[in-house]
Amino acid sequence: MFGLKKRRRGPPAGSGLLCSGAPAQPPASWEEIVCGYGASVDPAEARAQAGNAAEAAFFAQDDRLATKWHHYLEIYDRHLSRYRGKPVRLLELGVFQGGSLQMWRRYLGPQAVIHGLDINPGCREITEDGLKVHLGSQADPGLLRRIAEEMGGIDVVIDDAGHISAEQIASFEVLYPLLAPDGVYIVEDVHASYWPDHGGGLRAHGAFMEYAKLLLDRLHARYVLDPDPFARDPGFADVTHGIAFHDSMVVFEKRLKPLPRSLRVGHRTLS
Image (cartoon, rainbow, N blue to C red; front, side, top):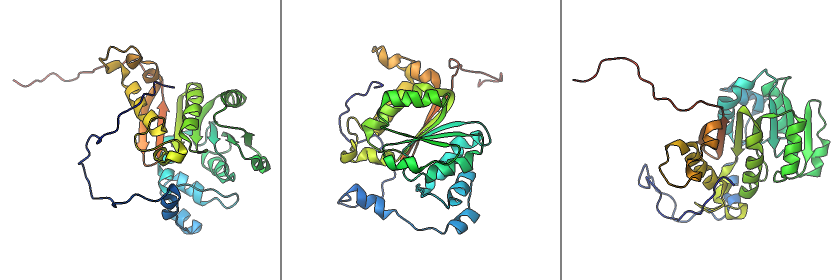
């Protein structure tokens, strides 16, 4: 792994910032949380009010079942709109009922190469033209490499599979190095990083969210003064444009970039 180390628990930085008070008792289970946010929707009305192309593509889905948190759709469009109408190669980990693959086809257009991976043998029923589903585990490195080779490379990964931290990390460590130099890697539902039965917990060692936080340090490796050579290794930073944290989602943007440069323009200075 990318230098995953154990952290001590303690009050987080900024712990007094914008506090409004939380219930004395936490939710009884993650099921209680997820069910509490469920909502029905009129697809036709939602499509008419769509604020972006991803919302329009999602609410136009009338065949196979698809489920997404509503705020994900804006995030998708923000990071993936540049691929629309182009021969982008997208791999979705976690196919569920196949509706999201159809949504991606509608959103990205006919030139997109769209593959999915799922452990459910029932996904063999998904045989639509232009969509290919592979069966197996997202934590199988050999399978992931074979899929990437078959696709001729990957531009976009959407990890919506089992939400188990160890498996999310395993997939990322295989696929991120294989991603196109300007690719996008999205890990969904990282709220599961805070649930023990998904391999997580608040600031828990091994949780995907903790792993992603450590990658923020890797992104800034060139500025580290620590004597540890690994902490100063710029390999990850040299191919990563940025990491965006959203509610329940982390987005990694790859981009080969030159060394940082401090630029100066103008000539007037304070006396």
